[in-house]
Length: 143
Image 1 (cartoon, rainbow, N blue to C red):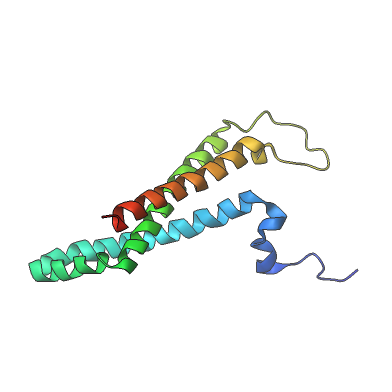
Image 2: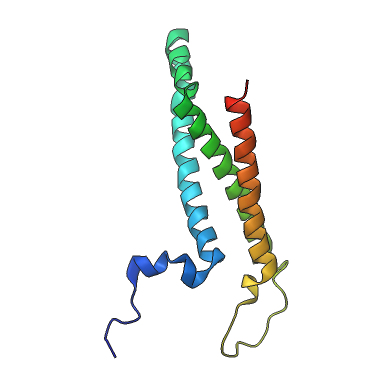
């Protein structure tokens, strides 16, 4: 047996095939959290530009009225909706709702937290975020 056979490192940690949709949800939650933090900092910077006068404020707002600006705002909508919906799912799961009764940890142990209800909620969070992004695209790019 090789010494490092079971050590996959970051490649194994990010492997969605090994851990399923729960791992995808884990990574999406972290990525969307960082994305929303970056948006918050940019939004504070943009909003504070009003202190420098109307011309600076208008030129700053012109950045959001471009195709790239609309795409970024659409991504922010999706990140916000997914992060919120998945966060609510996690609060319920940590509170014990929808998880099921504790069972004896016999081999092969499958945690009750990874049941179909929770997986369905993850898929629903992704779906609602996609719908919100499509609506945002239709508002931003529609005439």
